Length: 109
Image (cartoon, rainbow, N blue to C red; front, side):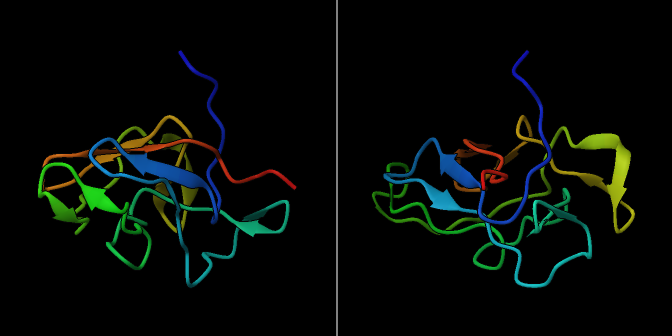
């Protein structure tokens, strides 16, 4: 199993159907920080607000239009605003058919 780390705003992510990687967003902090970066939870899954576009979608054959659901496999015993903390091994699915994974936890200085 890959190393698990908490995910913060600015972490790099990728959709397996997208043409480019992009950073996760958190416009409003939950008040929990790691290295002065806001920590995410599994409910931070809203298209455009948290989940960016990933360039050209190979399934749609055009611009990415994320349609995501809650992140899977969060840290069940660590909560950020009563929700499981997001981990670097977490993933979510796009209604279009892609899977979004986390490439970096974003904690780098």
